[in-house]
Image 1 (cartoon, helix red, strand yellow):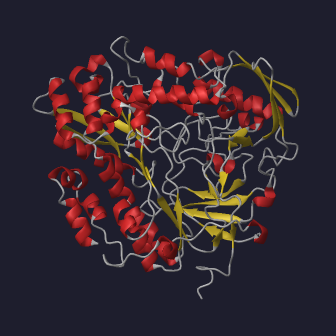
Image 2 (cartoon, rainbow, N blue to C red; image 1 turned 120 degrees about the horizontal axis):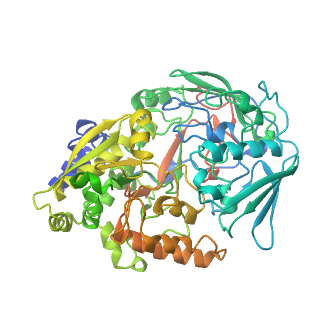
Image 3 (cartoon, one colour; image 1 turned 60 degrees about the vertical axis):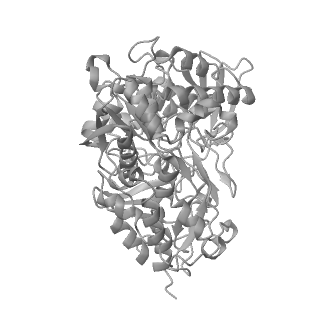
Length: 599
C-alpha cells in the first residue's frame, strides 16, 4: 500500500502540495497511512463488510451503550444554533424526516410530537393534533406531564423572539406563519400568509435553532443550563469536558423501541485517543477515518464493518463581500470564485479522504459523487456536474488549475492573490473539519491563491464575526449547513437569497448591492415556494444548479463517497436505517457479542 500512496502522491507537484503542504505533516501522514494487509491482498467486500439486518423481533431491553462525543455542549437551549447540540437526543419536533429502512431515505416526512395534520383546501391553514401519550422528561418543574398545545405556543413564541432561524418561520421576518393558536390542549392551528409547499418540512428541522419543543415552564428556568425536553433521551449526568450520560425516557411516545437503559459518552477530543479506545472495546461505535478503516479491522478483527451509501452535504466555503473592505474581499469578482472552484481536484480529494482507490483495490464497490450547489445526498434533486445533462457550466467544477490561474490574472492579479483564510481549529464540526477545509485551500496554491491561515475560535470569534455577519469580513471561511430547512428548495432559499436568515452569506450580483443577493437567482428559487408539483420543483432546482455553477456564490467541499461505519457486534440493528435517524433508537445490546463477551 505504501507503494500505491507513494506513486499517487508523485502524480504532480500540485497534488503533493495540496495534500501535504501548509497543513503539512498531519495530512501527509494521513495520506501515507498504511491500510493493513499488504498491497497484494484484495479481499472481496463480502469478507469484510457486515450486512445490515433488522433484528427488532429479537431485541431485548437493558444494558449500557459505551459511546463518545468530540466536544462539549455549549448550551442545551434548542433555539440557539450550536454544535455539537443534543437536539434529536432530548427534544421533539412536530414532524421529522423519515429515514429509509434497509434502503435510502426518499425525502418523505413523518409525525413526531404531532399525531396528525390537515392542510386546508386553500393551503393557508395547517391544523395539527398532538400525541395523547407524549410526556416531558420527569424533571422538576415539569415532572413528566403531557406535552400540550400551550407548550408549542410557548416554544414558537420564544423561537420568534430570540431563535436563530426565526426568519424562516415568522411572517414578521419574511416567513410563512402569520399566527398560531391553540383551540384546546391537543390542537395547534397555524395561519399562513402564503401557499408554502415546504410547510411540513419546516416543522421537521431537527437541528438547533429550529422549532424544537420546550415546556412552558422554561420561562422560569435557564434552558441553556437546565436540560428538559420530550425526546427519547434525558440527561442523567453531565460533567463538562468529562462525559455525558443519557437515560431512557419512558414518557416518550414510542418507548418500546428504546431498548438501551443508558448511554455513556465521554468527551474525547483527540481522534487517536478515541480510535485506540474503540479498538479495545471501550467505545462501541466510532467515526473512523477512511484511511484507518482496514487497519482498524485488522487490529480488532471482532469489529463489524457496515458500508454506507454516499450521503451528507459537508461544509461550504463562503466569502467576504463588503465593498468597503476593498482588496480584502477579492471573491466579489466571479472569476476569482470560479478559479477557486476549478483549482480543486475533486477526485483526488475524495480519494484522499474516502480512500476510494485503495478500497476499490481491496474489492469494495465504491461510489463517488461531486456536489453541485446542492449536496449529492439530495436524491432526485441533485444533478451530477460531470453529466451531459448538467451542461457547459459543469466545467466550473472540473480540475483545471491552468484556467484558474488565467481567471485570477484576468481579475487583476497576474502575480497571484493574497487571501485571508479564517480556519476553525476546534472539533465543533468534527475532528476532520479543519483538515478537509485546509486541503482545499492548499489546492488553490498552484492557481495563485496565497492563503494566510488565521485560526479562530468557534464560539467567541467565528460565530459573531463570520457566521452571523452576512459577508462583512475579509477573505473566506467555512461552515456546515446542517441546521437549515429540511426542504431542498427552502434550504436553497436560506443559503442563496437575502430572505433566508442566518445561513445567507451576504453575496450580491453586479446588478444588486451588498447583502441583497442575485435578483435572478432569488426569483428562480422563489418559484418553488408555492409549487406543490414535485416534477416542476425538481426542474426549477436543476436550472438553479446550472446557474449556481457559474456564479459560485458559495463553494461546497468536493463531494462524498461510499463510507463505512465500524461498530462492535454488541450493537444490534446497526445501519438498518438510512438518512436522518434519532440517536440510539431501535438499537439494542447483545451481551453475548464482543466486546462484552471476549470469547
